[in-house]
Image (tube, rainbow, N blue to C red):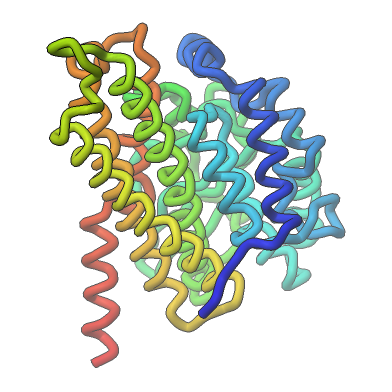
Length: 349
């Protein structure tokens, strides 16, 4: 398969990169540690560009595009450790709501939420279907929660619009992810799907989330390798930059190689999801495993190159380390996805 992004996709990515370079500096990310918020002026700017509504159907004010179009933008969000929940809202919630809107039965309910996402006035959080009971990333301050009730008859998908106090904030390694524990009781009026329909919807949602998170991890890995490379050029030891030492070069080259291997895997998984490939779920697991491995290795190498200063608040590196360690476990760790892939392969023998 020959795959390449179109000129329009690359131009959109470059436009988003320019916006984030100005509006999402490391100082902005630090500020979000003290006062995390799901919607900011930066989020409004992205909405005006059409980023938040990229996967929202055109009928509700979006572009109606897919994961292939979104993945480069999520990579840019990862590159700057953007605090706002772009992956959760646009990469996970919007396509799930779009699936529900397509069958017509829930159009009246999901239509306003989709329109709000496109306009930048709604952020959404989706519970990880594989980790029931855990805090939900982005739940603290979200306008819409998509939650799963695991019953004896199978999973049931619910939509909850939380009131103040319905979500208890949970401390996190990366506070910008706004973890929260929803206090909710499943009700008939909150049900969106159940039975086989819910299983199919949640399966697709889990795959999209894995790929979306993997795309962010690519950007994080790229940023950390760049930070470490620049530091290695400036840091002097024995009268010369440490980047001139072969051991340091090998560390950085190894991290870059893992990143370059992971990138096409994530892109390919996004294409598989959009095209309805029968191996799309397997591709999503491979993508998340590769992206997690690449980002975790980039974090290890960049911290080793920086030394102890990499742990300090004054050093930008820690902002990317914390996000990487959090996202590498979100929606399935590398090990969990390898087990899912193995189970899938064994089941088809």
